[in-house]
Structure formats: structure tokens, C-alpha cells
Length: 71
Image (tube, rainbow, N blue to C red; front, side):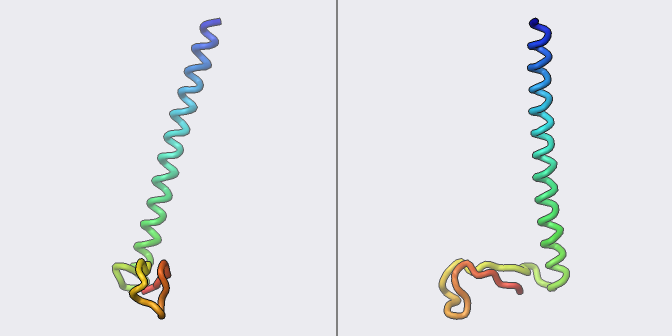
């Protein structure tokens, strides 16, 4: 009986480790994809900041707060 419980606990631990590794790999892929897209936009636009966000109302009436601008 105790062997079965020990095996079950080990199985649960290995599943948790697999899930953690899977989540880490997924996060890495998301970050890498975002960087690739950013670098591609930098190459296409020739600008170091191809996308900017208006954070204040200083650019009104042309642009409102939280407007996205493509440079």
C-alpha cells in the first residue's frame, strides 16, 4: 500500500516539474517572438522606437492619451 502512495506522490512531482518547464519554455517563446517582431519593425521603419504610446495629454488635440503611434 505504501509503495503505491509513494509512486503516486512521485508521479505528481514529475508532472509539476514538467508543467513548470513547459511554462518556462512557453514564456521564453513569447518573449523571443516579441523581440523578433520589435527588431523587424526597427528594420522596416529605420527607427529605434517604431511604436510609441502617448502617456499624457500634451499632444492633444491631434493625439489622445494612450494612442499608439507608428513612427
